[in-house]
Image (cartoon, rainbow, N blue to C red; front, side):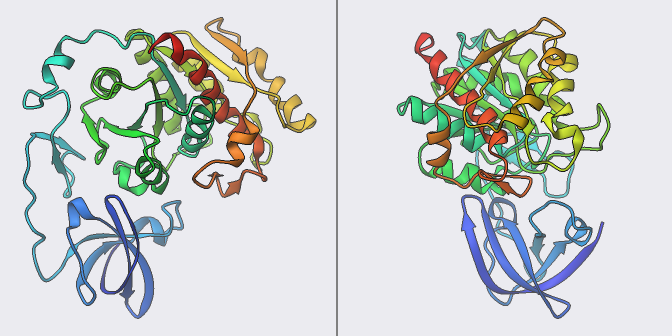
Length: 358
């Protein structure tokens, strides 16, 4: 790990649970990020301890140095109910009131809950799929109650996601942080209780299960954080939900393994997922060459007999009206339309399926 000390120069942007600060680090102006729940309040002139490990190596963390703590004072002690520790055994572990623990007022509901009543649940590999799913679902059914389940295979603090913060602020989603992730409207010990809470505590019509920003990949068949979408499908089916598996596709990624249908989706849905799912697909607005590459992978996708393709449309206008910017791997909607269209297809299908679960 690489540690730095610095002095707060001025504030930057802030959103729910997070605050940017410009910091003087060894005579260089750097951008730091503080999670307010952990670090507390900071001020201009404060000396701070920073972790610069990822930024120094040019990894995809938004270019941030992470502010660990002020150096000249102890942050105010937080207090509140709950005894579930998240980011366990890390120096900045935090304690929350989980919806399923004994001290929660919702414990009796989750103690007795057995299923989620066929609730549609959209799963996606990349965090950038979240606004596309939500925008399209709300376009088709504006009154939908949508729960976003932030899993723990990428960024643990949901506060890192400006996308989730803005969607929540608009009232488009209610957030649930599951497993080791933290900071949602509702905290859950694992994905199963997060799904149960989405249905029986929040009263959601549909849920979206996506990891936070910070997808990890190694260029190998099994070594990527998105394998969790296959495990999510198994959990959804175990609880009697309707699993909707969105495809990670691209018409612009420079890496061959992610052109057409990404090998991430093929591995997760045909090898990790052991139970059925609906796979929404579309041809709306997609260039012929890109569509041909995607469709060429359909036989591999269908090889297990567990996946069912469902053709949908009504996506393009909704994507262009998204209330938050659509970006994936540095590309916008016009750069890689197919990526967002196939994510948005999950929103269409979920909206269509909600009528039977209300």
